[in-house]
Amino acid sequence: MKSLITISTALTMFFLASNYSQAQEKQVDSLSVVEKFSRVKKEIVQQEKNALKIEVENINKRLETGSINQAEAEILKNAAAKKHALNIENRLSIVDNKMELYKRNGESGENEDKAYVAISFGNEDANNTRVFGVSVKSKEKKVVYDRRTTSDGYIAVGLNNVVTSGESLEDSDFKVAGSRFTELGWTWKTRVFDNSNWLRVRYGLAFQFNGLKPTDNRIFVDTGEQTELQTYPLNLKKSKFRMDNLVIPIHFEFGPSKKIEHDDYFRYVTRDQFKFGIGGYGGINLGARQKLKFEEDGENQKQKLKANYNTNNFIYGLSAYIGWGATSIYAKYDLNTIFKNNAVDQHNVSLGLRLDLE
Image (cartoon, rainbow, N blue to C red; front, side, top):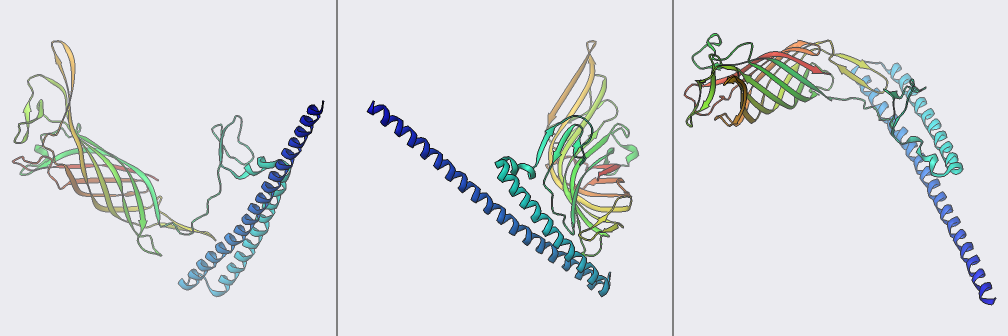
């Protein structure tokens, strides 16, 4: 009986100690959360002060350049100070509300500001954050006052051919309509001058696919010393030679742009504007291949031949484009010869349309 009482007493003391320990942990957690909210409030005040400082500096720059006068500058500064003071007041109230929410609901109350993606159904919600049945929420990003560098992709397609030393394109060994090129790339565009956008530097990375279709039932043959066109013994339905390149294009782009100004940021926009770019590219040859289609013994045959064909490993050339908005006429010319050791120099040349995916 005594042993039973002793055990009961020990268990009671254990549970009391456990509950006391958990209560202490919750109290410590609560204190740490309060400290965290306190730090957040200090950060909010500092962030708004820094934002006000940047906005005032930008107003002073506009005053120095003469785009606004002293009276307008004072009005803008007072409006900015009032805006950021209200921002501090509202944001601190939000933090206080979140702290109260945490006290009532625990950690579940801290998840309000976290980014998420959720599958949902029905029409758009009140905040218009549902896209094709997927609800999306992300943290707000700070707006950059002056974004000098932007990026976008582009695609170019058109006719491809070869400039042969001593011959004209009219005497080309390749079909005009059948020889085509495709170029896919991603570029960054950086404004050169502080207060003007008439000159930009455009640079990036691109894949070039240059195709050639020989005339007169011929294919390329590597003889060991050079690569030459030879007649194929069977009747060809298709003969296509393709070179794949990875290049770095660099262009100086000229043209007007529209300046859009707001209180806390401005942008130069080149949509629906004339543009002209001139520059070049350099890179490496990723490989060459031929694709043949023919009929043999009454059956259709296909062959894909991948080899070096003595093509140059390094690619470099000149390119230019001129157009309006996202669409341009695009031309490029390889300064390197296609083949290394051929007796006659041959250079790839392309002309087509370029579409910037702005």
